[in-house]
Length: 170
Image (tube, rainbow, N blue to C red; front, side, top):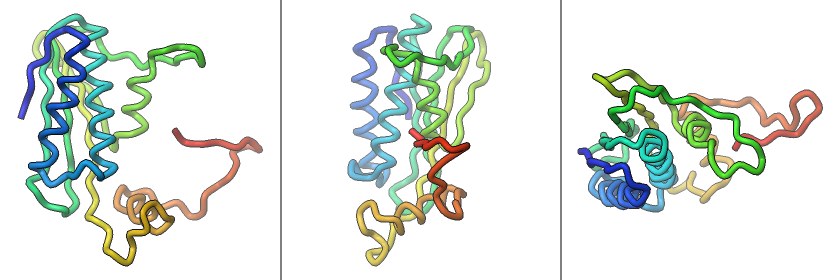
């Protein structure tokens, strides 16, 4: 499924609403963390296309078909600009420049490729099976560990510091 995007900042909100409306039919409920992450990624990638290219774009979503089984959700934004996406290092006071860093931090995979005279930026999110009733403690360690294992991340024990400095993955 796809949505054509005009080079207008108001299109970002329309793209979010469109994506949210497609989630219900795919079995991804609004309460799932995956839904919120997907909507944020739609927002970031469509904003980048609208703000940085000034060209029309096409938003594509590939969603699973109504099952809670592990699957992959793919989001793509294609535009006609030949400008490559460039991650920026935004300063503390900057109001922008964090979009690709968010995509990198939230998506399981992402990338871009040349497409015709333009490009396609894509990202994928892995949807894990729903936790069983015994495991679902609404944010507890067991649920987080299950999600991490599904995504292939199995930390031994959380490390509170790196080189003597506390850190947080954002």
